[in-house]
Length: 77
Image 1 (cartoon, helix red, strand yellow):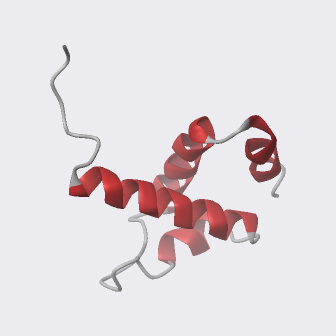
Image 2: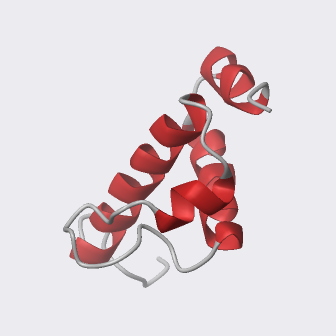
């Protein structure tokens, strides 16, 4: 059995919350730069450190979505 961080760890839960927020903002038409600079969920800085980090988070979120919803997100310019 592989050892690693618990799926219910605070860090993993916060990462999933950031992914969800980033996905919502992207569907609203925001750029990766704007998503990265958006206020964090806890109000203590930006949501992500860089536009690239926002992009990577959204890519990870796409893997967990149903195909139809993922296609909608991919179609955002």
